[in-house]
Length: 193
Image (tube, rainbow, N blue to C red; front, side):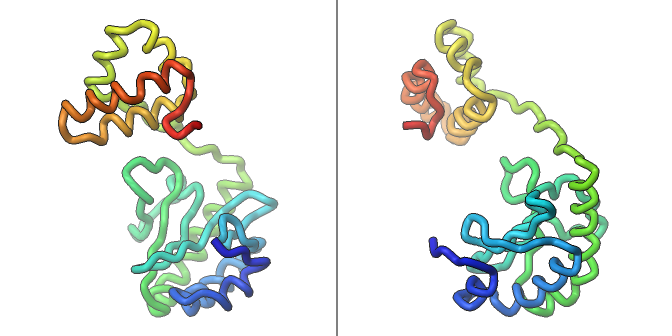
């Protein structure tokens, strides 16, 4: 990932969506947001709180609202980042014409996001997810494993569950549980070293 000192340098190097970013940028700045580069991308903040991030993909430019789940979306233009994402939502653009057509919507949504930030609105709790049946059975059969699993942070529990439940076949889910059991017993997350 390149290190850009500011958004001007980022735009100068952009080959995918520079025209679209150039159209969106003044809309965000007119809302009173500060801009900086975070995670190698243009990020727009209010008093150091992240409000939106511009993300370039091969087939679209995304304007990602960090707390997008809080926004009203009467125009139906916000999309979840993925099936397991809780708070962020994105608007997608594939042309300057898209940005121009949604300029008022962008401004309205950014102002609403700013209002939520200023009010201190918290994201709603993530809904409880059901554990994979095979994982439930294994935890019920092994007290030490169950204790170690529930001692993990909720994020690590969720990551293990997603890893197990992501397998289509029961035999693969069982195999994944076999492989992660030593990590769980050691109190480690799926990606911990």
